[in-house]
Length: 356
Image (tube, rainbow, N blue to C red; front, top):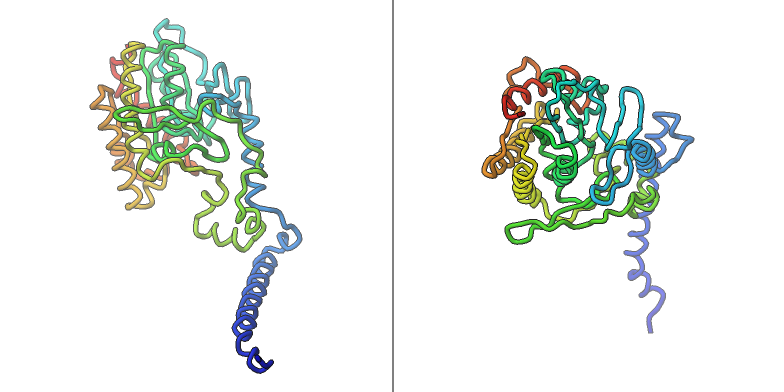
């Protein structure tokens, strides 16, 4: 028969574990209160920071964009805000169209083409219009992956019958092809199929309500100001706040994007417009040499794929690198008016007489 004395040692580890756990909880609680007290205002407000961030993004995007079954979303026709005007088919205003009768130039890409952080007249497509004296259609869409960029090009080129098409990208657009959801918005994606690609995820479902996209940890730790503070200092909020769903392993996007240049080559033949594939760069490239090397590798390989498929290409890196301070060509994340003007000059030079 077991006596109380015999049972006591067996329960001791559990009591110790409970004390350790209690100490951790109390310590984390005190840390949370201490960090909040240092700012004072957050001592009395306890929101879920992840949910609030996603609600802000959802509210902004729901006003500025409209759902699209094939692309996920496109800029909303008729939308206006400070410095932003969206015209027919989700094109951003580039200014009064020149009346020279020549076929327009179609510019497609992500937020660098759209021109985040600058006004309508300071985007590189608007500058390109002034430089060339011909209409330039700004079909850039913020947040797009290279897959969505190609699909939008395929949708608009037959509609506008341009004389030339400029398809611009940054290296992160290649990574985005590995996702089926980015920043809480579902998107189409491609599946490698032998030597080709199969389009998946269409029709694309509408954006889910922000409160339905949180993981267990985001529903719990999302209330922690201390956790948010630490991630902010480590520059890790992008993935914590962002709602991203991966469908392919890392690196698959490089193969997918390379294969997508073959689709651009087919489009080039069908619409009879020369396509120029342009590599742009985000500002971190000028801050982090290791990051820059990887970004340049990815962009260089995609440009090489484009050339093998008969596309004209332009790598803007060297021209940017030879400016006194490349970082001065950006606002926060996107290019400022001077940076966009430089991109426009490079694109105009690369087009030459190809924009017939």
